Length: 213
Image 1 (cartoon, rainbow, N blue to C red):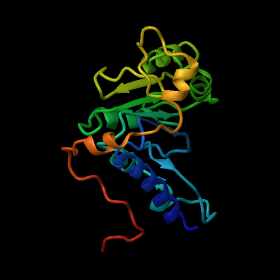
Image 2: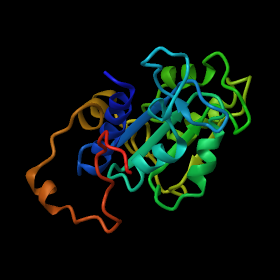
Image 3: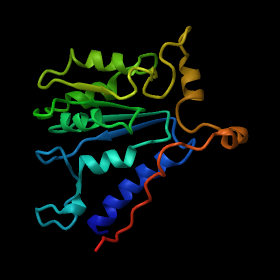
Image 4: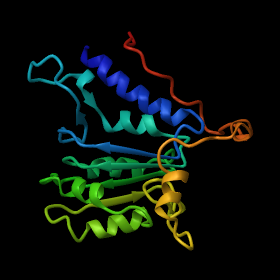
């Protein structure tokens, strides 16, 4: 496969999840790759030439374009890579990511060290914890950088990583979490038919390998 097809496949997958009604309730995206100093992710050196071109780089602008106006209830972006704060800077300025919660391993000028951020999020007990609490607890265990939390919902999204309400009383049992929120869920036909059309601009088209002249 050529680098262009790899990048297009990645972007189209994200766009498909975001533009398909009821496809995802809590859409979690984990980014961890080498980066340029402007925060762009370096994907694959598929041609093994030791250099990168535009087909091997996923820019901040491209990523935010792919998840804008996403139809998921919440989009959770976990970023463990160098200069991850630059992605949060761009998200903060956006008005088309109202359901996006972003957690970065560091500030815009900081490097990501020894996988502390990933280890915390991967091993945390997410069952009854709001994402904001998961972030607060990360501040006590991440030593080599200062994690950042950008909430474009202005605090209106109070769910855990799986999309379950984190303030439920009594809390959900493990069985309820697994049966109601984890994995694939049955969506009744009436729900498919009752969802009103989105009022935002038309979703971005899927990408092709063609370039504009």
